[in-house]
Length: 308
View 1: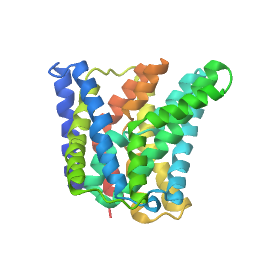
View 2 (view 1 turned 120 degrees about the vertical axis):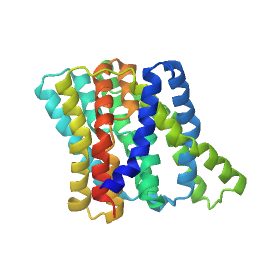
View 3 (view 1 turned 120 degrees about the horizontal axis):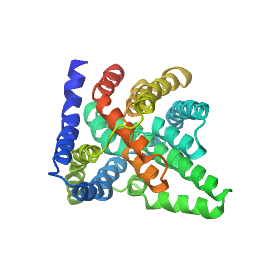
View 4 (view 1 turned 180 degrees about the horizontal axis):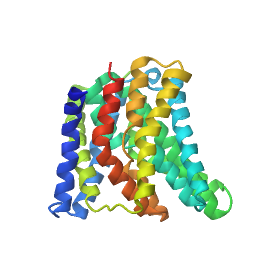
């Protein structure tokens, strides 16, 4: 456990450095937004393309593994939904709290950290988790809120969702990489070096951006924040572990990777959705802050437990 904690510590130290830089205004909100755009559109996309191009379609599209992660995630999604309904929250707040409970920071934190700590064999399962989060649950949130506001589920709303997915650079990078691999192409040495160099900026850039973005966040409604953080950091990995180790016959290492991915703190893109739809963004922001701080310990515990 101590060895795992020491391996994860540098990642969280980079988040802490970003937090300090944002807190003392050395890194402004505009600078943080620019760094985030660079990571999202360039560095992380290069990393994802390079990783995906090294996979076969079969290595990523493990339907049993996807089913295990989906089962565990949907279970916690429904639990969070039930808790929100018992508190008599408006429909859109119910949907947003359920999203907070299950969407972890796989892109900016999970892929860099888990691949480096667990090895390159973790690439396929982590990319699969990211794909399920983006394609299934981000789409579900958009569809539910759009249908609620329009009073019906229109083809226009579905078209906008599909277009949004096609414009997401992470999905584009993963799809292009898998297509490249499926075609039997091999990256030329200069292209490999270019992608490795650009993708190498994803890890420090993403972690620093996470920290800087947390500097302006405040904890509102502590009880709700603690519940949502607990759901994400404890219930989510527990449910995925139940699915992967007990309900579905999943290979041991891959099961451990998706459980570790499920233990990640709330993703920043959930806040972007909350702000876009103006649905409790302050509550989402607080959950991101608290879950990220607590994950310094909880993620290490989970990785230590699932490590071979």
